[in-house]
Length: 185
Image (cartoon, rainbow, N blue to C red; front, side, top):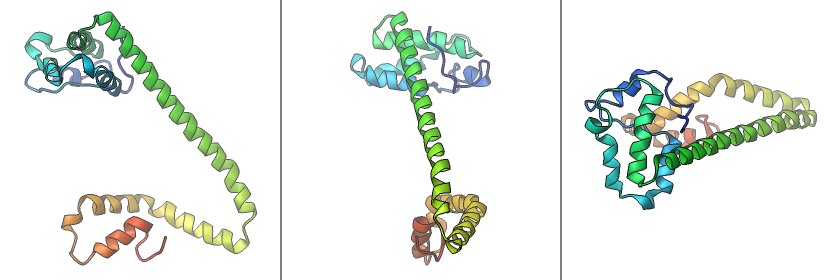
């Protein structure tokens, strides 16, 4: 049987009830299910997916659990793909395992980079002059203290550009490039 994704909502949640009533027409589809549907797109027409919103047939009564939701949705997906439900359960399980492995691999790469940085930085610092070390420390302390402020400001610049005064475009471009107004990269 298909194991629902671990990044999904908790086992019992209002979201499953909400996704199983026609008053709130939302279908929950985790990444691996979407990937599976894309891989199998040759088996169905896009409009066949509307069957997933047939609440009267699929959910005569709302469900409140993850397993209850997927016990209904997986057979519905199997019907759309014109495949036996057991086969779809197995395929979705393979996609879930593949997704988990991809996540583990991403974490392994990040951990490798962290280990490299931990070994590389001390070597670089060892070869720096005292003056270079002080300049680097000042820059690092400033960046650390203002990182969240810069992120908030970049989001404003990115998402609220139309609300900024007309005379600021140069400042906006400079700050987006360097992260510091009035300072070269």
